[in-house]
Image 1 (cartoon, rainbow, N blue to C red):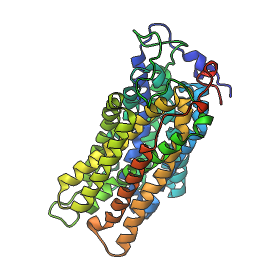
Image 2 (image 1 turned 90 degrees about the horizontal axis):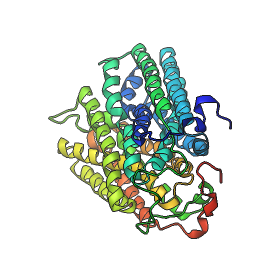
Image 3 (image 1 turned 90 degrees about the vertical axis):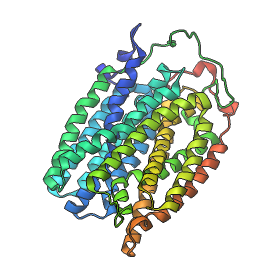
Image 4 (image 1 turned 135 degrees about the horizontal axis):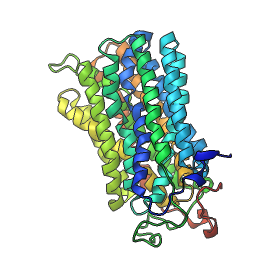
Length: 451
């Protein structure tokens, strides 16, 4: 696939002396924008009221967006490796912004299917291509600190809702109509297009043979779980390590996304009828708070993984996450502080799992086609994007029809999440170093070629 003009990989090779610290801001411009997806719950109630949708229906754009994220990342991963990050960021900008514009038209005309198509379908492609666009580039610029580097960028995806949630709430007002929602979508699309374009213009790739200052070669594997060899994307699919990590990612994401997608209505339902009910503004603040911990977890936990190892940090995510869900299930709405703190930690592990994943893949499979491998693994996110909301929304709708209220709407979902996290913990324990038969010959270890 030919890439013309300023989008070509050959046109964005960094000149001598160019600082690698410009790459994380370029990545953040993309990830902070597409991270708006985590603020979808702010639009759920307004859409349900104006277009007369159920909770399950209003979650469809978000669910399809996550499905398309995984699929576009999987099928586009090799193109991203081949054509470079600028091409990928440009495609992501077009698709993500167009998704909002189509959604604005859908709301204005009362055609919800256009919202699903725009935000979920076309915008979801922008999510997937945008998400993986800087990952392999960051790992190449920061081979000495891959967890920290990918954590900085992917932190933006988790923090996108920290900006989008209050911004969207302010535009929607207390009682929005279809016109208010349509204008909000329109403004989102235009503003994000400008902001994402900054990343397109800034990003660079290192020249062949570049090493960080003070380093002349890549270090030998320091720990058993870190390989000094490389594995192609095609061969990675044949390894049990890939599928163990697929299960780990899928179940960790399912456990987090179930809360995140329904965060605003969930906390409102949970404490309705208590002495301390949660209003609309406070619920939006809860969404922003979860976004903050999601964002910080991506940087903090992934940076710690550089010191303690990826397998150990996933043991922490999955094991402690199981205990936190159990605490919520047992305490119900007895303490708002306990509920909020547990949810914050669960979302920090959710975000940390995403940010640590590229470094885990780099440890196991090397830097050769790591972006393409990462893209294929994100199909687990697609499955989780349907599974998590389906479990939480579906059970909540069913319990509500049965006349239940408060924590009873969600208790079954939380016990399901506990079981899923236990399975994920076991899958992580099964990860072992990749066998030599899957390694690439040394003379073929060139990033961007197709296996």
